[in-house]
Every structure is written in C-alpha cells, then in structure tokens.
Length: 335
Ligand SMILES: NC(=O)c1ccc[n+]([C@@H]2O[C@H](COP(=O)([O-])OP(=O)(O)OC[C@H]3O[C@@H](n4cnc5c(N)ncnc54)[C@H](OP(=O)(O)O)[C@@H]3O)[C@@H](O)[C@H]2O)c1
Image 1 (cartoon, rainbow, N blue to C red):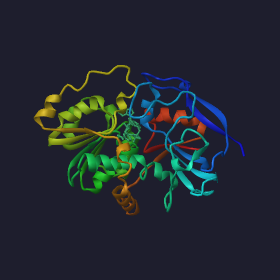
Image 2: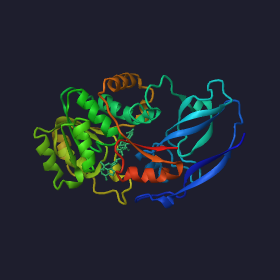
Image 3: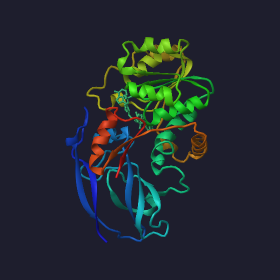
Image 4: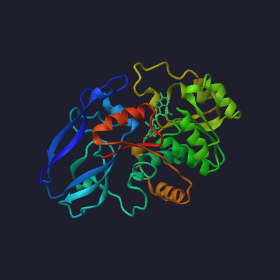
C-alpha cells in the first residue's frame, strides 16, 4: 500500500533575523511499509516549539540543523494506521519526533505508545508533555523551588511559563508574571491566579517595575526570554537567589550578539546562582513529574489553553505566530 505524505521542509538556512513563510515549502512523497518493524502513523497533533528556530541555522547546537528540503522534525501525536510490528496495532496513539508532516512510516523503536489516556491526547504535547516537564524540572531539580518563595516568570502565558506559574502557586509561592499582551495578563490573573501579571511591552523602566511588584526582591527567576529582561531581573534578585535559564526567545532571531549582561557585579555581591538546563537531559526523570502533574490536573490545580492552527500547510504560519507571541498556552497544529 503506497500513501502520499505531505510534509514541510526548510528551503534555506536562516542565520539571523526572523523567519518568514518563504523559508518553508510544502512537499509530497510516497511512503509505504517495507520492513518487519515498520509502522504507518497518521499524525493528528503537531507541536511547534521555539527551539526549532535554532535548528534553522547551520550552526552546531545541541541538536543538529534541520536537513534542507527534507521533512522537518518535532514532536507529534498520531494514530497507528497499519503496523508490521507486533508492538503496535491499528488505533494505537503514539508520540514521535516525526512532526511537520501528515503521515509517516517509522521503525517501531522510534515510537512511544501513549496508554491509559483520560485527557485529550494533545495534553501529552503540553502539560503532560515536554513543556510541562520542562517547567517541573526547571523549578524543582534546577531551581530547587521552596514553598512561599517569590518567583518571577517571563513568557508567563506560554506553554512552559503558564505551567511554571501554576506549579509555583501550588507551592504557596508569590508569582509575578510577565507577558506580551493585555489578554494574556487577564488570563494569568483571573484564571491562573498569579499575584501580579504585567504586559512587558507597556513598561518603561522594567527594573523599577519589578521593584514595585516585589520590593524585597525575587528568590527565583524562571527565564524564558534572556536579553534585557534577564539583566533587569538580576538587579532585583535577593541574596542567594536562583536564576534558571530555560530559554532566550528574545535573542533567537537576533541579528547581532548584543551587548551582554552589564550587571555581573550583582551576581557576585548577591551570590546568585545562574543555571541553564535542557530538558533532553532529563527524559528518564519523569516519574515524579507525571505523578504530580496528573494529581494537580485531577484536583483542578493546573489549567491550560491551546492555540490551534488547522492543517499541515499552515504549520509554518503557526511557528511564525509562536515566535510573534500570537499563542496563549501551547501552540499546536491540528491535522
Ligand atoms: N531548556 C529547555 O529544555 C526548554 C524546553 C522547552 C522550552 N524552552 C524554552 O522555554 C521558552 C518558552 O517555550 P514555550 O514552548 O513555552 O513557548 P511559548 O512561551 O509558549 O511561546 C513563545 C512566547 O515567547 C514570547 N516572546 C516572543 N518574542 C519575545 C521577546 N522578544 N521577548 C519576550 N517574549 C517573547 C511570546 O509571548 P509574549 O506575548 O509574552 O511576548 C511567545 O508567545 C522558550 O524560550 C523555549 O526556547 C526551553
């Protein structure tokens, strides 16, 4: 049985600056089951994530650049249509790295079956997926979050940030959330219960604003954006505060390296810890995360939103929208 698969590929590398639709193309290829462990999967949900921007440059990173003119990669959830493998049957729900396409044939060892599902399957790309796991590991394992701390979160209405805010609230912390629109501010305050939320685009002096919201300073800053925001947060950390470097979205498409952090004296004098991490180093450390997240979800202690773009042909637009802040919560493509 031969099937035509539609996929998105990158046409050229983007060394700096913002990607646009002309960098991507929609293609087709014929696929069929060949080997005894081949499985045919129809994707239903595709994740687009900020880290993919780094794979669109030719520079070495923790993941290699995408191959030009080949199907791009990323997390996806789909249904098994046909299987030569005894480990998978028709109808199984599987997680793969074969996103950016509507269907594919893959070896069974590259697929992860999702079982005992009592939530919408796309939750395994959000709160119970990589982004929820990132929030959990970042806060507990990297940041050693304690009860009742004062926590600052940037990109707080995004997929990772919205989980960070709620996990910290579940520990009785005071949470100050920064985001890029008034609609997101409302959601953070009224639905997620953060203590203060603000639209960073409207703030003239961020250091003074951070001071007004938490005059005694911050114990922990969960940094999703880097750049000037990081420098401002350093000014307002408490002694022995912890900064978790999760992402640097404000710098991802930068056309120059910028000036760097000018207030390292605060890092020294306040004895701050600044620690980066990659969730890919923690893929086998999911048990506590899954237990806690499932418990919080059942007790209505975690809420989430999805921003859904329809159709594989619109996956590039979904990715551009993500970089431009059009998403609230997890950005997904529905096939
Ligand atoms: N370390 C890891 O292993 C790991 C794993 C997953 C994700 N991450 C990182 O975590 C961060 C959040 O990822 P996510 O998947 O949850 O994405 P997200 O926050 O759902 O979406 C990205 C958001 O970034 C914000 N943004 C865009 N440009 C910005 C700028 N110049 N300054 C400030 N904010 C900007 C936009 O929201 P606004 O409206 O608020 O501007 C946009 O909605 C990213 O930096 C990502 O790379 C790291």
